[in-house]
Image (tube, rainbow, N blue to C red):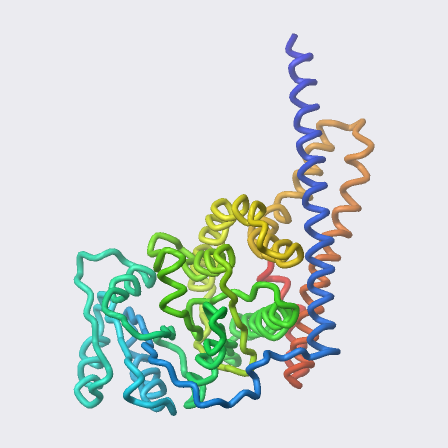
Length: 393
């Protein structure tokens, strides 16, 4: 009887693995084709946003929100950059949020606020919910501007950036905009150089490719804007999601709003400089992204108003972190099962096949990095590509 049950369990495990690996193989091929397609789109056709060279006198009322938690080293420079925006002062409101800081952040904000009447300082109480999403939601009821723009406290926007982020809202169908983020501390160490490669591929190729083919660029929660009317229409700001920006992107998509990516709207950021900080960042992204995957996959599949290829691409983005988990589990699981199921010829073939499929998928990612570096005319950064593999794994 025990032998019989053991055989049944082995059979179930084998079929489960084959199904999972088949799904993984399909995802790998789709990601590879997608990455190559976007790479060639950007390199050959360079379909820039319609708003790249548009310079109209469109100045809706804008509120800029800057959450800050223990940012005494960066907040002053960030605020000086924001206060220097070439935008009508009577149409601009700036809200700097002190999110329960324990350093000199609040005193710096108050000092700068005294000299600039259109800068409001919002001080959160110690017993409030922690985190950037909660901080932003707390100030939402006091906002009446047409457009809300977000910056993190360690970002350095240029004088003309605000106008670039606002311009697409002239189209009433645009619910959100997103600019390009570029690290300014790239040469700090190996980690910052690797993150720079990732940023180039993610923005210059992936976001730009999605924008060029009218798919779904993502709103990133910073260096981007949201139409207040659109935010209210999709249920307001979600402070319960670890990745509130991804959550908002899919709510906008499901409700028929467009997101416009602007590669020419560049803002500089401070990348994580330690592996511990980077790990925490990726952990939050993966948990939050997978949470959105569970929440929005079925509604996205059911929504008939979304064009087919736009829906497919949005699903691939949703499953990106889940795919990474499958990559981590796939080959060791195949090897393990092969040791207890020696006569599984199909499984024996899967191990080398899966290795090649995995390599194919990552080749697409590396190709994006190469194309992005060529696009930026900074091919010298490709010397760090071999080290990117260490962060991927």
